[in-house]
Amino acid sequence: MNTRATEVPARSSSLNTNDVFLLKTDHTIYLWYGKGCSGDEREMAKAVADVLSRQDKQVVMEGQEPAEFWVALGGKAPYACDKRLQKEETPHSPRLFECSNQTGRFRMTEVEDLTQEDLDQDDVMLLDTWEEIFLWIGRSANEYETKEACNSALEYLRTHPAGRDPDTPIISVKQGYEPLTFTGWFNAWDPHKWSGGSSYEELKQKLDDVASISQITV
Image (tube, rainbow, N blue to C red; front, side):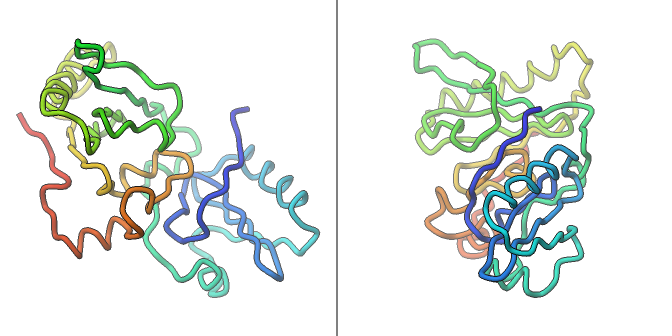
């Protein structure tokens, strides 16, 4: 059982439809069950809640949140709720690769876990969610890495043993401008880690930076 509890900022944007969240207030503990959470996650949440407090526990199903729940989180806000994340078991697990030429040669190396800390701002990271491929461009990634990562993504699709659709979208995402369709695949994503306190939607409205996310076509 690969289930763990991680503390995240108490904001609506921290929620993920694929997980369970505990929210402790002065009077109660909310157990928020996302539509895609597993039985193991629900059981762990109950155990953690019992350790944290003897207060009343209130189960909240995604989509049926009381007003007090959103108030405790500082108001309702967008969060990762893509329908693909709502499946308890996805047929194809997401895979993350680091694309780097720090050794003098360009290499694509798979990363074991999907955590925000694994994203290296000196490199390009390839996230394969099966229906889409994301190329995350770190702030300090060089032009050669970016170009080779794009070429490698195309070759990755072409040579995949499962016979992938060659028209699978390849989407380029700049560090700090990650959409929810990207962040939802990571455990305990902090939307303010690189954005100076602004969410993706706020940054998008403020800067109107159409170049921060782009789809690569051939």
